[in-house]
Length: 96
Image 1 (cartoon, rainbow, N blue to C red):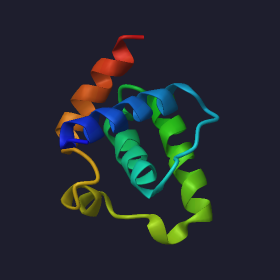
Image 2 (cartoon, one colour):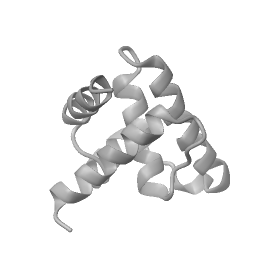
Image 3 (cartoon, rainbow, N blue to C red):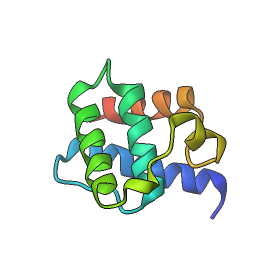
Image 4 (cartoon, one colour):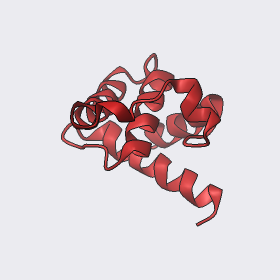
């Protein structure tokens, strides 16, 4: 899988989770990316932000050592840049 494929997959998961309250992060990467995504879309999509946060928090309740600081998530390449994440996720959420 290329970096763009990984990015696209994570973005698609963010969009699904942002729309469905019952979703949960499948792994540490998703949980940390959901946490970032919740922050960057909060002002424009407060409900979707809440769902992303809840999915992330459910994962970290079982895996408390997996939480990373936002800067660390970006630095390790676990997520795309914050502006890119915001722009791409905003576009995806506006389509529905």
